[in-house]
Figure 1 (cartoon, one colour):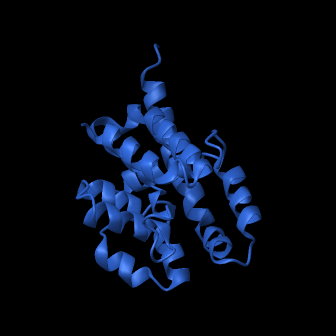
Figure 2 (tube, rainbow, N blue to C red):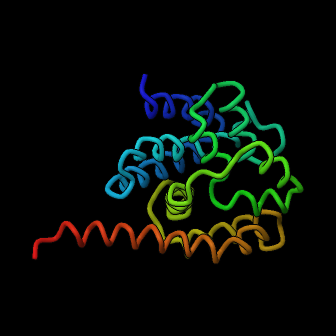
Amino acid sequence: MGLTEWAYSLSESLLSDPLPRRWTHSLGVAKRARSLSPIMGDDAELLEAAAVLHDIGYSPAIATTGFHPLDGARFLRDQQGADERVVRLVAHHSCALLEAEERGLRQELEGEFELERPDLVDALLYCDMTTTPDGTPTTSTERLDEIVHRYGPDTIVGRFIQRATPEIHAAAKRVESRLAEVSAEGQPM
């Protein structure tokens, strides 16, 4: 079984029944990851696998701390023996260090999981933050507004996402610039 096939199967088994909307979102994030293949090269499969797995830590079957990046990464590492790079991407997706700080878990996250390459971190962040909870494409601005509205501005998630907003927009811009460069290179003169 290939990496992406395994990742889809595992994510579906953990999310589809207990959290169908989260599963739909994960499928949308993975679809967005596939759309980045022109700029991902040899890491396209890695990104897609991390994208479909990024929210498995929400699954009631594996949630222990209540912080889904940490719970998902620990499960992938400890129970699945997953690819180390996939584990690191799941652990640090979408500015997880800032949310970990809000939750008093930053030292645990940093101590257990190294950051992956910045371009991969940007790509997964972009995929997550330009996909609605229902799995459809959106802009980072609309997605951030939706998150603050859904959770409330004074909640842990609301505070974290507001702190992360500049980095999320910057990462989205970096990914979109890379896509535009590749697209321009492919255009005939």
